[in-house]
Image (cartoon, rainbow, N blue to C red):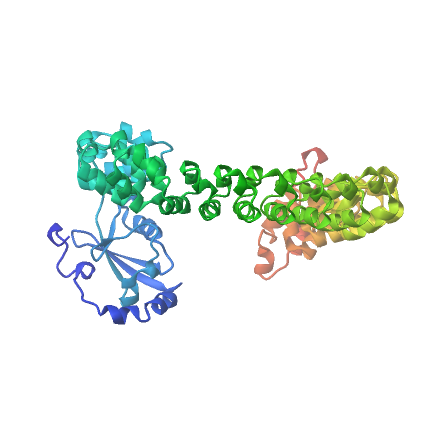
Length: 590
């Protein structure tokens, strides 16, 4: 950068020797104390121009780039910030940089602009959903290391579209193979047959063994080099050497510890080795599939497997499907594991309840004897009322049982039989706990004044489920709107014109005015009282009246009050010039 024209006095590239030990003592405290603090940032261009940004320590470099774009007009995708001799990445937190803890007057950064076409292609490959995005790029872009590296990080196979010069460059190919083993297959052929290059690649990423030639995959030195970096590469070895290595206990143990499914390639005697199989199922529970039949019947190994993956139960010996500890461990991971349990365990109350707590629908696997058990079903509905759906029909029609169930969970009424739904005692017990349970009551009880009144006092919107006659009951509607103003939408047409009732609803929630009779909304006296109770009520006045109110002091923010008057002033002035407005022209909600 010094030779690129950066000013010699630029603090951002000044070589400063720091006492590392002194910096490390308290660097954590320094960064913690900077969180949320202001951080002046000075950004220097190569020409020496400076842009100052008032940033915060909590900002990311991405946020700083957005701020710099607003301040300078430089598109964010073209910006590269350099601190000292290090380029900052978008995810870096400004307050987390070591240099911030040492800086006293802010942070000095150097900006190096990317070429426009490079920036555009970086953005393109980052958003791409396939490896082919790079295929349509011009030659100079396919030879651009930064663009190609980003494309490879997004999709490893994108390397096949890189320029030939990059696929022939040893150092670059080694860099990308380190990140994506599959890139090896797209290197130039001269590199792929170069033994030293192959060995170097495998030291960086053992899984590249999958992509070397068949001859090399049978080469002892090549295989051992790959295994030294990643033991699971053993599954890609071929030939007599592979056969020998798959019988090597230490090699196989190292492989399954990194990839449990590597057990599939192990020699038969090792798939019967408890230590090897246990290591494999700890890594991948379903590796149990490749264990010997004797170990698939081993409770300790199967328990470990299902704790890692409940699907491993399908590979266990059938006799273990009656093992309570194993089934319970599987159920805690996935309640559907119950479908693999024995009939005896499906009658286990504790086991089924544990599954129900994981997923209420797991109760469908319970034995019929449990679904008829009062105590079990009461425990289940206490956790989730929907479990009653699976209970025996006799229980759902048993009024004594349903009364107890409602006391534990009022939502069970929707799964009750017709008898309990028509029981006044049961429905009352449900609606005082959950007003909207009225929806599931029998038709007669939805017309029962006492039941409906209890429901709307608990939840005003329960009035939606009341009979048509009770929607015209003033006391019930008033109780509903006092609990929730929105409940006024369900009131009868006659009650929507009741001034006192509408004002009561509006006082609780002025949005209830949108359901009022339109003639009330053009009455200045009525609207003056509504605005007095809630200054936001003016929004629901008739359009013409609202215009007059606004002109004479009642506005969205209560402009009349702010000017020293009251919201009533607008309504009073409107009243003096009261006009008759045809009902057909009324817009209830402005």
